[in-house]
Length: 457
Picture 1: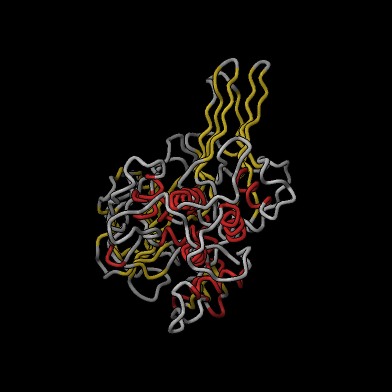
Picture 2: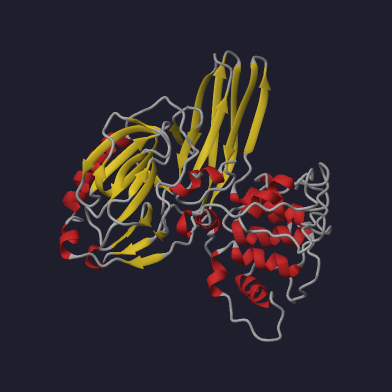
């Protein structure tokens, strides 16, 4: 089973016609509640809704029907829903899918049954983290290592997603509330950050990372802080990465699931400390599509031409920068999306490849806007990509715009967010006029929708 919540939640931000967010909802009973931020975040995304009387009822128990629907709709199993049969409960199809997938620790459908915290933890673990192994001593006295819920509760506790009622008490038999559900979902989809901090004799050292779960095509934003005199090293796994604030770690498409480790090593006099954070990288279920290119466009996708294009792009994308990245982006056009990021494309005799950007419909000559302030670092006609603009936004983060009919800015120009930088066209290997929009961290493509300003924490 492959999880799609990371991509799903990003796609929801790009609606046809350019609308990018759901309407703001105000509930009568969440102002000042400890879970208000999480509730409102998921409400804006259209994932959690309130009741007809305008309330959310954050302290009400989550029912079995509600949990089953959430599990299915935040996974790739939604497309496998069996047909709804007249007379059955509306949630029965969701229960059947969840049970078939092996997510549920119970056997019979009771739509109004209140879900205990232990059962909910088991279900979330089976959906989102089935590939992660847990080897540790129990954190909670009431969840021993022989419990059927131990792996789920202990694992999600280590990942910073679940908390107990006290240092040693989790209360697995207590019912899960709607507020707790909202907080858990926000933490799973990465709206929270994980932090580890330690005080030294010369000041604090601190490592933080958001989101707390990664998907191929997403990126991690890492902050590492130490006193100025300290010698510091930042690692992703065994690989040393640049130490900047923030540091962006891209997760490539095609990455197999694993538990990634961010490691922050500091040295100063007698101080030799290492802080670590564990970040799970999960599967993503990717859509597929077939592309029937005309013969002239197929010629532009020859390996000889593609290699020349890569050399031109990499010469720009490999340039170091000391400026922090600009992470609050806007859409380049207010048009519907016609092809999503990460789509696995079948080009017939040319083989398969990922779609490394987002395609928008448009008429030739329509204006294209800068997604964020930056510097133009490439304006050149390439083979398959056609007329290509690349903007640098600091921290190794770039936005790329392909198939343009005209450039309105040139290399070296400083541009502002929303400024007209080009026009939609159909240059390069295309089947018609459109805009292909990419984000890259260095050479690695990531989903540009994750940087939309509505998705900022």
